[in-house]
Image (cartoon, rainbow, N blue to C red; front, side):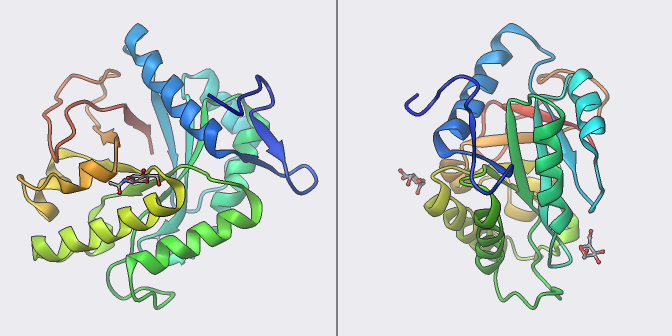
Length: 232
Ligand SMILES: *[C@@H]1O[C@H](CO)[C@@H](O)[C@H](O)[C@H]1NC(C)=O
Ligand SMILES: *[C@@H]1O[C@H](CO)[C@@H](O)[C@H](O)[C@H]1NC(C)=O
């Protein structure tokens, strides 16, 4: 991958602030997929949501336990930017040599604190905030009931397509965090268009089994999952 220079995977922009570069993010993902071939335990990601503070020491501990990608929440379903998410990315970076430093957005679809009119505006707010510190951080979109998804699946389909297109048009890639039940409830079992934009699926499966196949049923057009979400 062009631009990859060994340990120089993150280049400083402002003082000691660091940012994953676009090529590097692709590389992280690629390395991540490749690693699944050799180990069923590979690909464990961690989700730092809910505005928690996580110190660099805690990140180091999570890394020791097998987490490979640090994923922190940058926007929550109440309609707020999660400023601690920015700090958490930096703590993850100083704490351990993760394969990837990613963020996720839990869209707000109703009664949003920031009065966002659309998921697209929320994506723009997150990208603008990230651009102040980092470059081209990989963004996941979390599908969760807290977002206030409509009971109308077509409405939801339009919303998620707009959100995914907004991320992809800026970053050139995007991922989805979901499981079978949430996905089929909000979007229907035959809706596969989202997976043509979101090439990466982070499968949420709380069955306590540390593998990527136990209980896996394809949905949304994703036939394989790149990872399962391990810790909340
Ligand atoms: C979202 O963030 C705001 C501001 O920090 C907080 O008040 C609210 O409780 C958060 N909502 C969720 C669902 O985490
Ligand atoms: C996502 O973005 C990439 C890079 O700009 C582009 O090549 C690709 O066509 C986009 N995917 C979709 C489905 O629009």
